[in-house]
Image (cartoon, rainbow, N blue to C red; front, side, top):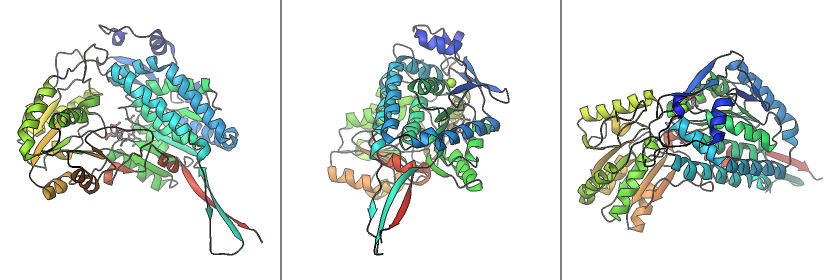
Length: 501
Ligand code: NAP
Ligand code: MG
């Protein structure tokens, strides 16, 4: 397979064995089964454009089968499992993921394109940290007693699972996104149907084997690879799925809500896109702020929901920041994820590359100044590489400033005063994240309170932790993942009245 002829990297035997021998089919009721339609799709290596695997495509009938299995597990053994036993299984799964981390990291780099160093040191450790953190909540999901106004009534609440949860996830952190959903969903006692993104199904398939080895009862976790249509859409409208946990674009989030509204009013939680403002005040530690701003945009080749793509710089520091950013960004190496030196890998697909380059061209036409980059990278074989690009702009209405590009493109502008800054920073339909760099602690907090975003970083950017709630304001979605709030997202409250008379 030419996708595996990487010039300077020897893949693990386990990675090769998975690619060559594992059935890339549907995981339903702890079995690998063929797609009922017999259809399949290809997943590619974005660094080469080569096909990595042919994967079974789940259609409506397969979704039905998975829902039946998940429902039976919820009504059966899993529904009776004690909290501590659920936690033990999840800890076991975390241990297995750690044991298989090297192979999982390689599969992530092959399927998604991200640097192997990032997959190994970033994605994989965070996957198991998150899983263990969530599993720790299993036996701490408490209700309360309620002092009502009626006499002789003992009232208490229980937090109960929702039932069958559907998870629909994107391709930028494939395994991590799967675990963000699986962790709290199973901790809270739900069963799960996971649809990985069609661009990156491999680690979800590998995970399914580990789920089985860990000893989860059949039907608790089902994995259905396939595209948004028909697989994701069939889940969103399914009358026996109780909740959809979605991470992806605002456009698709809207469709999921519509499908939920028009079917069984299933619960929906949405983690959507962003166009996050990152602000550098002139009193900041400017060199740290420049490095922070650089990684805020260019990690994961700009394909992060929290990417700090709108950089606001106080005028007194503007020239210094633009110059510093140009110098730093020009040192970044664009290469395939297994290369010895690489900072920016490929974008996910040819279509995404065309879209990103289209935005860059729009930016140029709209009069924004290219500070650095501005083109695709042509000399790296068949991969989908784009130069890290920084634009300077004045007009807040142009598409590189208003739209989520989801590629390595930053837009930097100067501001003069507080009111202007806050108005412009909040002038977006999104509200996922924001950053601010200043040595003035009062100003930092004032900004953190004024900006409409679910997460704000002061003198840093991009940290996400299993314990820290994460989610959007405005059209960046609703619901908070991570922290105890993630458990709230996967449970419902029941109130029980007891007449003690
Ligand atoms: P996307 O196009 O919205 O896809 C997300 C998932 O939804 C994929 O699994 C996709 O399937 C599926 N899907 C597509 N159409 C559907 C439909 N009609 N019904 C049900 N499911 C459907 O997003 P993406 O391009 O993969 O990911 C990029 C987006 O995700 C960005 O907007 C980014 O900001 C956002 N994101 C947000 C967060 C966060 O935590 N807030 C994190 C990461 C990414 P296929 O793609 O397989 O067809
Ligand atoms: Mg792929």
